[in-house]
Image (cartoon, rainbow, N blue to C red; front, side):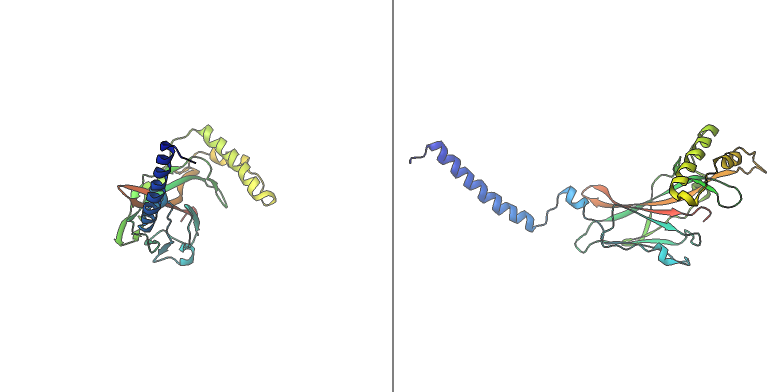
Length: 235
């Protein structure tokens, strides 16, 4: 069977393309040239957070083989956010430059005898992201919390506050089921009290300390992990 000239030419071109793809493809793979999305998915091997003066340092340890994009853990009442250090452990082949930014978040707390009511699912005050200093490679110093951070909170009306109390009580009743009895009337009465000595029956407090870990990929910084420390009010 005699092939036409155009079909012969097509076969030759296909053979050349397959050869080039095979040679070029193996060469590229051998050089480990990752695309931008591939690099972003290369997570850290570990994150460790410690404080020099913490009575229970174990609460501050976080070390996972494959940390997720968002990691949360709690800071107990006996811990203070002081002398905090964040140490990153990149994978052996990861040569990227890293930096960490910190953000402070506040929530509103209503005070009464016994445990307060925390409005954690309502408005929040959030600071701007602040880059942490790095005393040595892959080690960063957490910024201390200031009074400005603690007082930061958006504006709201009394009606918005009262509705937030009702909604939070519904959430609490669902979360704790039989262990919890709704007290929305009690908390509404507390919120409506006049301040005594200039002190309001409700005030903002730091509820979350957030770290945004970034890696430099080319000319841009990409977020690879976010760590949230959930703070017990009054710390």
